[in-house]
Image (cartoon, rainbow, N blue to C red; front, side, top):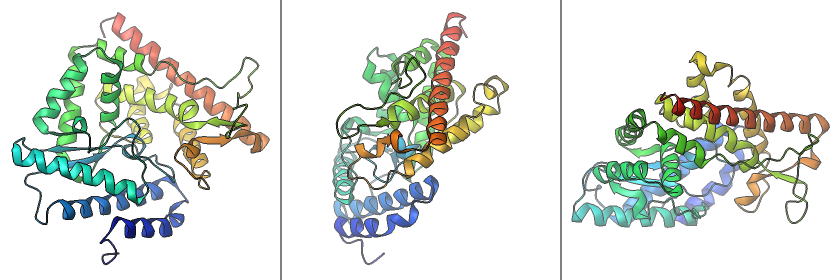
Length: 328
C-alpha cells in the first residue's frame, strides 16, 4: 500500500477492493474505515506541507465513526484541535482541514450535510478557542449549540494528541456538574424520536417510494439508544465514545444496571442488521431495513428492540427531569 497512496484515487481503489473482506463484524469494518481515513489524512498533510505540522494537534472523527458504529458507507464527521493559535498555525490548519475534507470525499466519504468537517472553521480551532466555544455552546440557548456539544462528545482521536479531546470533554462534564439544567437541555434536544410502533403493536413501515416496506434504523432504532446512553455518559463523566462501551461503564453503576438490561444485546443485533445493508448505492440507503423481507422471528426481534429503545429513552428523560427538579 505504501507505493499506492500517491493520490486519493489510489486510496479509493484500494478501499473499494478490500472493504468486502471487513464486513463480518462492525469492529473490523470500523478499524478498516479508521485505516483508510488515516491514509487520507497522511496524504493531505504531505500535500499541504512537505514538512511536519507547525505545532501539536488532534484530528478526531465523530458521529457514527467516533462511536465505532459505521456501516459500509459513512459520511464525514471530523474536526481539528491544534495547540496554539497564531497566523501561521491558523493558515496551516485551515488548509489542512480543507484538504482532508476534499480527500475523504474523493475516497468515498460523502460531505457531511451539517458541515461537521475540519474544513469548517467551527470545527477547526486551537485548544483555547475550543474551550471558549464549548462554554459558549453550553451557555447558549439554541438547539444547534446543544446538538454541537452532543456531536463533540462522540469525538474520538485518529491522529495526534489524545489529551486535547479528553481535556475538552472534561470541560463539558465539569460545567454540567455546576449547571444542572444543561443535562435537561441535552435531553430536550433529543426528546422527539421516530416512533414506528403502531397502536396495535405493528411496525409502521414506509408506505411509498424507494424505501417502501422499510424502517429507518438510524432514527427509529439506533438514536434512542445512542442519545439516551450519551446523556447518561455526560452526566457520569464517561469519556468512552462507543455506545456499547458506554453501556458497559454505566452498568457498573447499580443505578443503571436494571434500565440497561438487555440493551447491549439489542444494540449488537442492530449493528449486525446494519452490516446486511452492504449492497447499497448511497449513504442514505444504509439506514433502511426492509421489514417485509424479514422472517417472522426477525420481525419480532426488531419490534422488541424498538420498544426497548423507546423504554430506555423515556427512562432517561424521566431521570434527568427528576434530577433537575430535585436539584440533583
